[in-house]
Length: 184
Image (cartoon, rainbow, N blue to C red; front, side, top):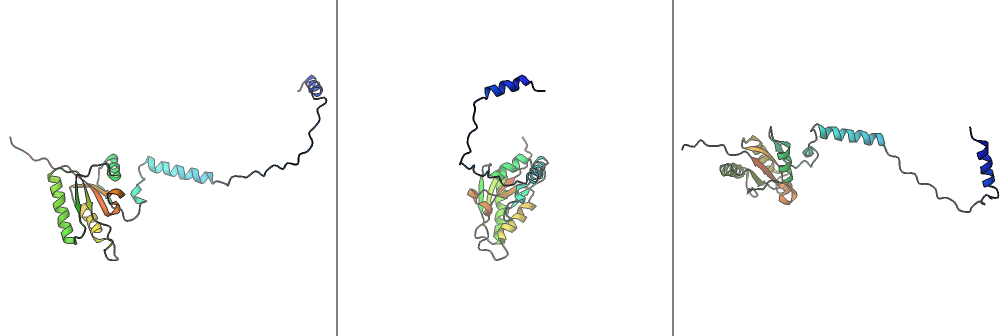
């Protein structure tokens, strides 16, 4: 319960104070922020966190359809990320421009065999974007995807970074050359 002495003290302190007259000034209307769907945003954040936590997020699934990628079984996440970022030094390169299917297939086979014999682990193969291919799409690019997936010496491959040819080239990661038994 308030003390009546405080009330008396307040009234004596306010004696002689006059209220201010009304002002001509009009307060600007308060602009309200647009409504935000906070629960929907929270749900989206939770889904993204879950995808990242359980490793289900695959960026190549949301990229354009003309990227190539293959990740062999057992390839470490860090190695895959480095390959996709173009972080490995490309030690050899093959350009398939102007070749027909037969020549390109033979060239790829010879090139990869030579690279493996020299223990070259990361290479770039330029296949082009198929701009001069028929309406069915890029021929050599599609075939290269199939050829590389079938090779036991290919661990992984993915479309190159834009400065290395973008969707017109692939980085290829090769297995180490098998050790040969040497006599001494």
